[in-house]
Length: 521
Image (tube, rainbow, N blue to C red; front, side, top):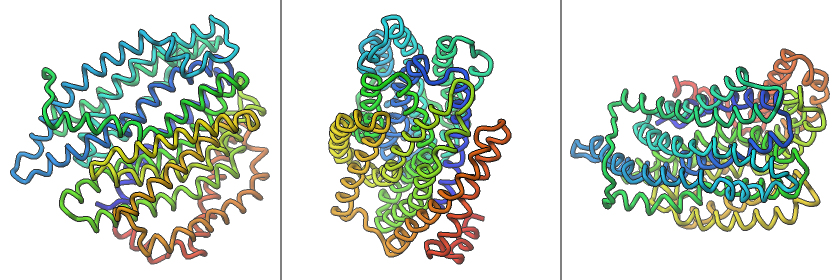
């Protein structure tokens, strides 16, 4: 498989989804602003969104895809039917668990919301009750997105990556439609309509994946629960994988709770908007690479091709650094004009832009580590090891909690994002060290040569953009057309400068680019 081409397919659709997400957030900032209504909605959406990252992009994929691939790779001709039978057995056990979990969340909405916010600090009883009501509206999304992840895992194993990658686009289109058609002068009502739209989007995503599976010849029947050996193996792998893949999300929950309790109203929203921008490159690069690498490496290892698996992971690491390092520098250096262009209008003013840009800079320090987690963990999951990542995730969570308590008072809204970034970096260091110690990963000559050069090229781009920022200031708060044009020129200029810097430093050779174009054609 051409890794770059596969990443382009998944990453391109994920990028489209994240761009629509920015449009959604810009509309939400315009109609709601940064206040208690927005804080309550972000909290209500935090849990199902975290569950999506834990389950759809993490634990279930990590456990299910390698096992499903072993079934499909069976050489007796019954590969796909055996894989479908395994998926049906998994569904028969998981569906009752998911229904029970959803019902439990609805009943326990009050304590769950309190745990995520520590009571919102100075919130009144009516305000907290409103937040609990929003949470109850979004909880059914947990069930729906988990079923989506099962169908998406099947399609990814069959190398139909783009279908599952397109599903989040439906989420953003649904929320944008709700904002445009059902916004209200009262921010509380607009937030409530958004919470309803979250669950509606889950129904649409499930229908999309179900239809795509039917077109691929995969139809899952409902059965009575049966704990066969394959399902027991799946369940054994899922829970450690959930903690390992969700370390960043768990860290964000801790940060959100402390922020809601200890910092002024609006702080949760500043951090949320900053995280949304930080998630743009993470979605394009990290989720795309993780989606492609896990089934690819597991299939190579299943055929005994260890050297090819390591080569694939080296190229994944190289692609991650090539795309991530400039994004990191750009979000730190150009955070203020980017935030202003996207969010500064209506109820979202200049001070909100400044505070969001500060939180974005703190988040961006950890952007390489957020993405490298997605590159390194397939090396464990493809070999059936979901326990080692969870041990390191636990250490990462502990580091995050300690740093949150240390940094949240002096750095205020910048403290929790910075703590999350440092904790994620610790996680990556531990994953990398163990993978290399076991002999499952070793940087090859090409990666060792290019990695430092890519870092120098990214710094060169950042220096140039620092001086160019002043040229964009008059336009990023102008009319809508001026904003988008200024943002497009800003991003385009950064890309051109970085491309030139990679050639000047020798990180990229013209001959390599020509070879890549010929291979992709």
